[in-house]
Image (cartoon, rainbow, N blue to C red; front, side, top):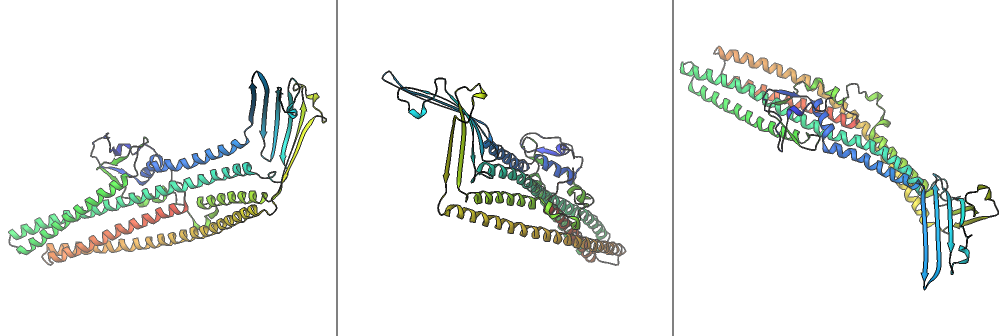
Amino acid sequence: MKKYILIPFLIITSTVVLGQDKVTSVMTLSEYLGYVKNFHPIVKQANLVINKSEAKLLKARGAFDPKIEVDFDKKQFKDKKYFNKLNAAFKIPTYYGIEFKANFENNDGLYLNPEATVPTDGLYSAGISASLLNGLLINKRMASLKQAKYFLNQAKEDQQILVNEILYKASISYFNWLKTYNEKRVYEKFLNNAEIRFKATKRAFYEGEKPAIDTTEAKINLNTRKLNVEKARIKLVKSALELSNFLWLNNNTPVELQDNIIPEINTATSIDATFNIALFNNANFDLNKHPKIKSLEFKTKSLTIDKNLKLNNLLPKLDVQYNFLTQNGNQLNSINTQNYKAGINFKVPLFLRKERGDLKLAKIKLKDQKFENEVVKVTIKNKINAIQQELDSYILQNELTENIVADYTTLLKAEDRKFLLGESSLFLVNYREVKLIENKLKAIDLENSFFKTKANLFKTIVISIAE
């Protein structure tokens, strides 16, 4: 679909006028929706959902970034060097609860704590720390990374739903524009008939073939048609302005349709291809691939991660560390098991009431989400079935309405011939014409409802428009 095909059709509302040619040009539904999809600010805003999730994923990955830490502390008082303490470390956290660490320590001074005493050239160490129970298989940073990945996938599905929602609203505006345009065409056609009939009646009156009251009736009918055309014109202007709400340039500038742009009359022949629903078959539709269902599944997986983290918190906390020590950092063979620094940290709450409460809440949230998933599946399935039955009904209604319009057209032509032969009255001709107008407008309204239902199917199954 050409992105810029509409630019000649539009006029920038602020400053720039893009042409003054009044030659009629047709803007198809496909061109219109393609323009909305590429330039509408809300569509661009929907893309920010993915950007935001990508930023959260980047932030979560930052928990596994290697770190360099330098801690220097010095105290000098009354010409006495109390102490100089330097501690530099390089840490590499891993996906599981294990961390590798290399360290250099160099301390001196008159009042240095004896346990901080190291060789003159400093002390090197290399080791590992690990959480053996709580935090080994799952911990907060691991859970945050997994959830960030799920949130990103969920955001992609939600973005597609948001884009389809704005395209649905835009298509409804297009269909309303098409409806008001068709209504105006109907009124204009019969206005022309009323003008011809008024002139003929007036001429017949001057020739003594018609009474004066017939000219009055013809004039009333003519003014009525003029009134209907004016009302239809205003409705068309309003619908065109409503349509313009969805038209923007790529620099976030709103645009407005020119008066010479008209909708595609034969939209019915291209609507399925535009909405990409021509080959849609409910029997073969995989509900699990629906963006809404996939989004909820990713949310369920995220809640499952949260539940597992809360379950892990019931375990006692057992942290261990072991570091090899050497004063020759450039000689690996100087490392041996006789020089080391090790430690164990163990703690566990006696009642685990906080942890058990958190786990219970996490399970409730997960169960609630699973219930919602099932409800949404049934809702979508039933909605699609209802829409398809509604479309089948509209097809039948359209056929019946077309037959009614054709029959009323035949009646009006016959009555018009009888009127010209002097065998009918202007009142009967006007009556037949009014009935034909009413049914033409009903046909237009029915077509509009049919198009809106097609758009509703497009929104419900959430697929991309044809490119």
